Image 1 (cartoon, rainbow, N blue to C red):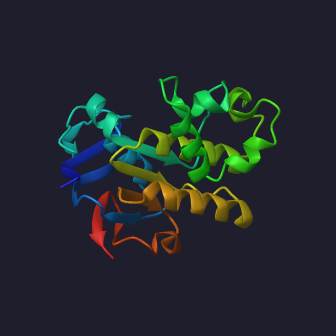
Image 2: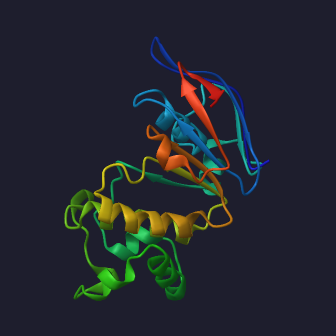
Image 3: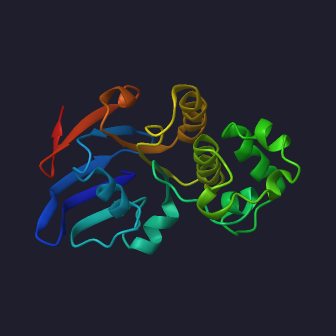
Length: 212
């Protein structure tokens, strides 16, 4: 199994948002989870990715159980992302050493290359504070390029196109298709139509997972 969740519970104070979650995802499988906004979908992804500490239960990603080691094995593309106040290049590499050909491949795959070619500073263009100098679609494709460059085994998608218009969303979806090739994918959304391509879709309701 690529991702295994056992008896996972999580609460914000007195409010329990995840109640005894159990899920196994095979390597290369694409699983969707649908549920209402605020129903715990994003919390689940943040626990899997190691951004939140587990309160109760076990999460294993490619054999890793600690938060730090799980983070190494996943890439996450979120709806409300924040870019670093740095260049496009640094936002893709996250400051790690990376050969130029791999950066350029990530840009090609994320549908960024044509836009970058029009910029006077190219990859070294500053994106502004919280990505203020780029559009929402460009910021989302930069985050996808970051995920492609990381080449993690598991991809976590949290409503990655819901804040984009149809034209921009189409370009991002093409980039996502490239990102998800041959990867284990967990995609959460409040819109069932966004999960049509998944191998199976589950429903998160009242803190519990159900087969739809």
